[in-house]
Length: 284
Image (cartoon, rainbow, N blue to C red):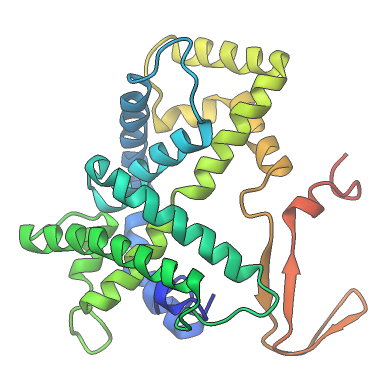
């Protein structure tokens, strides 16, 4: 990921140690419990807006639809912005970014993104398009003198250790990874959940009955989450079977022994939840 500097920059997504902590403190207020509760209504509003465009008998690419929905939710909750007009531009840019980043992560010999390979040139064009949208959103907040506590406003008001406001580049490096990480994983969870419910009618009927009993036709709120245990179990099982982050890596900061295996300092350890979730030692 550190080789993908053009995409992720130097923000919290790739920082570690004291640098990570400084970035984390800037963003933390946007994720305080009262703030999270207000996000629920915005999520419901965006979902309702999307569903109003659907009709019985439609044939739709569910992953594409869920990606658009979660992207609009991420923009609304993190940046208090309506990006529907930007969707065509963002859609193409984000698809290219995701594809090229995945190709980089899966490459036998990954080259830094500054090397002008065909893939990196495609990535560079996509990142420029993405940066243009992010810059506009941040500039709108700055010009409006926004005193809100969503992430976009917090970033524009944030100051570095020397009490200077974050530079446009620093603002960009914080905002872009939040947008990238904030929508695709949730879209994958929703897509797999609906796919699984379509194959298991008995479970789908349990979910529908619970929603009818608890909500009785009204829109859900954040307070309803605790009253929907069947729906919660379905989402957890979907995450177990098809985890959006199906593999991740960590680097050892020092020599350490794990279950009789010596892991040397600076060794990269790769963990796969997809594999672990199918191991009968942990799950029946």
